[in-house]
Length: 352
Image 1: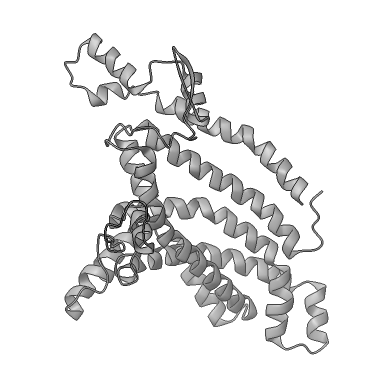
Image 2: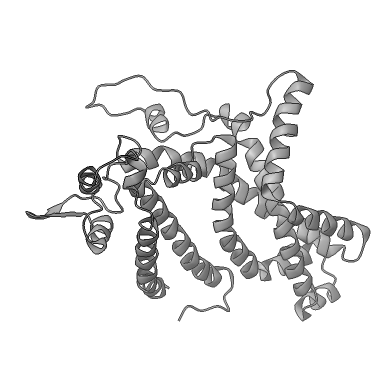
């Protein structure tokens, strides 16, 4: 298994390099210099700005500096110790890329991780109920609502969720249960001696970890919207998988032996349906990221999605390249992890 994993990593290195190189080419189609200077900028000012931003050099040199912990200049090669441009300076904010990306990771995870876990468990459970009652009214009702959920745009759910789940509900009950916009992190810590380091509260604040009381108010509504949107697609998929498995010979044998229906569904059927379930969860990851981008923008949650949107709009290449490179690594790692999980859940699969 370790040899297979190592080979898959090697195979995906050229893919990752190609993604980053293609991104850098596409970003440089529109010159960012004109967006940072006035309309009456002279050629001398434009050339000086290109030198300041570091885009006057060949693209391959910029690519090497981004991917490797080095800097190239007329004096030679200099070691920086940081890859993916984390030590670069943002063009939009006077700060390093790492200081911009770091506090946006936890707000995104506070949305995507609960939404992915809840949507997976709920859709599998609903798929089991629908498949177990195939052809009955409960099956038809669940399929009907699943199709309705698939047919409505994500933005419609967000707009209706903000109005009815936050604004209208606040007016009805007299206090704010869910916030329309905003995010609440752990309170700032007391300043300690630099040699003593940060407290746990200080570490949580540095990485913008949501507070226990603030998470339900600011993040629970976006998570519920994401779960509702995903539930329609996943329910139909899992129902089809479970219905297909329910016609197999081993299910007929288990029922002929007198096994309870719950044992047949959970112990036999669900266990053998784990491969398509794992595949579906891994395929859903890119859509979860896209969904979190929309939720973060509309709910003003300072996550990776909103950070990426802001810096793409302002043509901030260092931050955009870093976030996309990190997301590309996550997607490639999820594909490799999918194949490894196949072998763990199904002994019939061998990684050779």
